[in-house]
Amino acid sequence: MNFLKPEEVIKQVEALSKILPESLISELKEKLSKIEVTQEELDDILREVVKSYKKSLVEPGEAVGVVAAQSIGEPGTQMTLRTFHYAGVREFNVTLGLPRLIEIVDARRKPSTPMMTIYLDEEHRYSEEKAKEVGRRIETTLLENVTKSVEVDLVSGAIILDLDAEVMEDKGIDVDHVVKAIKKLKVGEVVVEDESRIIVQTDLIDITKLQKLRDKILSLKLKGIKGIKRIVIRKEAGEYVIYTEGSNLAAVLKVKGVDPTRTTTNDIYEIAEVLGIEAARNAIIREAMKVLEEQGLDVDIRHVMLVADMMTQTGRIRQIGRHGVSGEKPSVLARAAFEVTTKHLLEASVRGEVDELLGVTENVIVGQVIPLGTGFVQLLMRKPGSEDKT
Image (cartoon, rainbow, N blue to C red; front, side, top):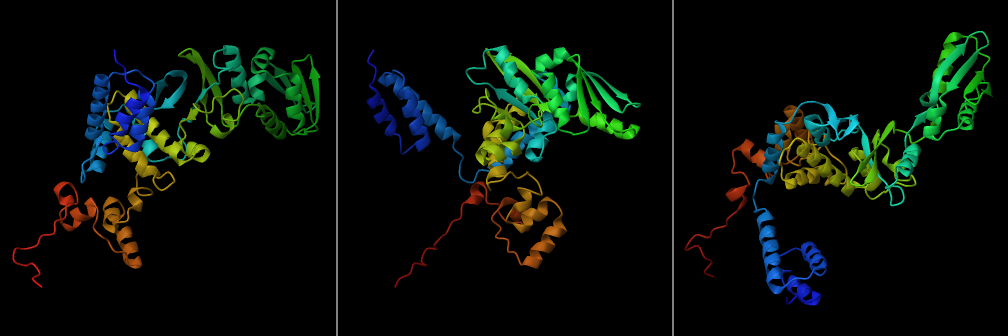
């Protein structure tokens, strides 16, 4: 077979630069130069690419916003209304379906069930022991997690802790670690008995104060990252992945053994803060599509991309609502048509705002042709015989 040389392939791809965008041209050059193709195969590939590209273009004046809203909203009514159900990770409850979609488009500051998916680097991803090692660095371990029982001695004012040696070994914590944490509270003398019993001797005789101190000691953080309550390690596609209940992206990315290029969270604001607004846009698209796909709904990703673009185009995350996209429209009438009509009209009249009537809603209100479809075109016509004869 007569395979084309890479330079011949690149030359033919570059010939389409007037039809295809630069990003698509560079992607074609990169991918086609790595494979062997005949002239006939290359013609077929390029013909299909051009055809798909032209089909994907939006006609001027097309109602992309209305189509996107309908395409997401209509299937959205068919979602299950169960707030929680088990999704992949049986041990965790995850908000899914309509409640999760509402959370995304409302740009809630904190998701109701914050969760992270942590991928590991080459050294740690194939060994369960090494994955557990990373997990121990991440999961928050409180003193109460490694304590079998607690007694409060009212006579001597002592708090007696019986530690669980098995759990401590699993969490990678020793008695010295626990003693150091208690000593930081500076509440009295700390004595170790039998390597698994710790006595905290205090001067307190008031039962209420002793109970408060007991609770304070039990809630001491021994190791882990703030906000990560629990972890589950699962094997997926030949590698170990850590799922967490709770989220702290900035701290987790610094942990040794974590792959920062694939690790993610379902907290969109956290992604925006740590990785920037473009990453947040991608997170909105990914999270919304995940919800729709889990419900078995086939929604074109471009509708979701349009929503994500609207939510992030100003460089910050805005909700689709009166405090975000809809409430910040430049048109007074469009804002008034959405919610709290009199407030918008009053404020606009005080400021002396002018409505240019450029959008759909405001033209519907005043009874004009809307700027969509054929109404998008403005024609200037010169009447016969009205030519300037000078």
